[in-house]
Image: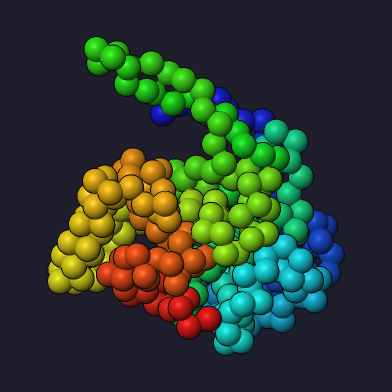
Length: 294
């Protein structure tokens, strides 16, 4: 797939610029995150990375950021208290490590960063620590849906390029692209089963295994076999019996099925568990959380 080169401006969490971007909050992270601008050798050692992330995660969560979460990401308030604390720790690390890029005139401020990071880190709630989305290099944000050139197979095997408007896109080489209007819409209703940030970051988890095929990396051959059996069966059932809950888009590819059921897992767990209990179980094992209990 080809796409136009976006006109973007880069905004990072580098400590050299963080304080200028948001004097109060970013200055607090700058001390703990100073290694971002430090010697590359320091970052190359896993134990030092772990210590650095632990120091960042232990920083106080700025009151202004709490207000943004309350206003923009109501899903956070539904979490148990311990998971809210873990989510905030993940957010601090995510924002310290992942640069954001504003495209087509989109201004990237703390509200944009926090709203996206909070939803992306929902998928990391089951992790006590570790690198957030290790392949991710940057998050690109457009004001709304953005156009891309996509190859489409026409009759007779002829491949044509068509422009498509997308709400989000995930690239295996380390980019997530999001439309800000769609991000806000997905965050505003945490129970509608539609969340573009969760969808695209589920693709990132899928792509950790090397390709987006609906089979994220899992430890152990037995786990991988079980995942494949459950997810493949559910995917083919959807081909034969359309589901109003899961929707037709999930039937376009196993990777899209995984991303869509991940949205449902976090936003409509009761409905997903009732319709596809084994799919819910596999997702609970993958994400190491149980939204049914929230």
